[in-house]
Figure 1 (cartoon, rainbow, N blue to C red):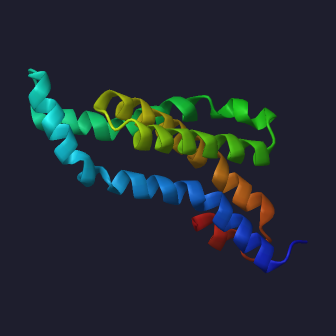
Figure 2 (cartoon, one colour):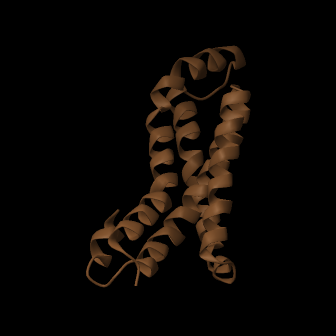
Figure 3 (cartoon, rainbow, N blue to C red):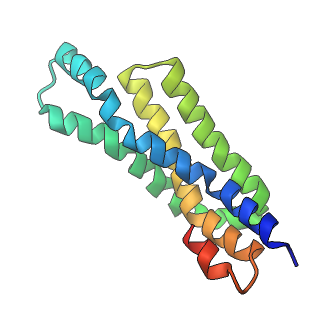
Length: 142
């Protein structure tokens, strides 16, 4: 049986990628001026709001794609899944920082979305497996 301290810290580590995603998703307001400049350069036929919503929803498209194939992840150990998941987040964030252009931003946010889908499918089960019966429900909410 694991101690309460190790279960709590394991849960926090497992939830870090979700926290990172939340930080990235709320920062969409910071990139709107960049999108506005790019929108004016391209002379696109659709409205600016549609352009911004495409940039915001591409994350959910990546999450949908990766959660569809989440049943294949049962063959891999939970620890490796968390490492691969964090690699999607890391590579996506690295692309966003290194190449601050709109189309690479879409690719980066799609990669982050792949990480989101894996997180949503695996982390709750992982937390439930490592926790005690007395605190499983509380940690499952994290």
